[in-house]
Length: 110
Length: 120
Image (cartoon, rainbow over all chains, first blue to last red; front, side, top):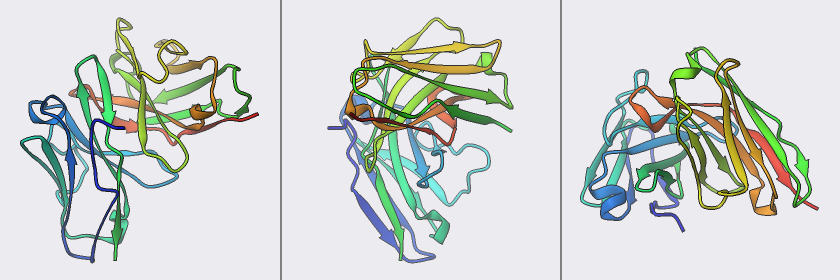
């Protein structure tokens, strides 16, 4: 069982926004700045979307945004497009020099 | 641009060993931490191992600690993962990943993966 909990699925229509939540403990999310989000299209390598809770790597569209409140992090995808249909994973670097991933959320564009 | 190409995945029997490699290009390999992450069929991502850029630190996930060894050859820009005493639950696609400029807390670039199947 992962230290990070995500809903298995989320969906939205083109143009709408969808928010994915990632829950953890105080040490895994709450007081941890090393929270990141990845997009994974099956058959490809995952892609870093958000790092340090809310920062976007260069080249990542600003339709993706990250935030955190308490022990829950979130990823919002605005202006949903067909290409956003993918699996999304939250991740955190935790004490003991380990990295953990959430179980993943499959986003469907209706 | 950054390119990571994994190789070595194949079908092996339980209890045997296998070594995966990841050939890196497009960046100065010796200055970045590197990771291995796997995904079992139909499952999510699982972090496997990490190796600091300077060779001082290696860390492993609980499920592979003591059986897997991560290594790197900075002269050849190759990351490797030696996997011993393989079990059926090690069956997965194995990805190598390059650390972000802001530190190895984030996995900035990933390869396409190589499939390891452990089956009798």
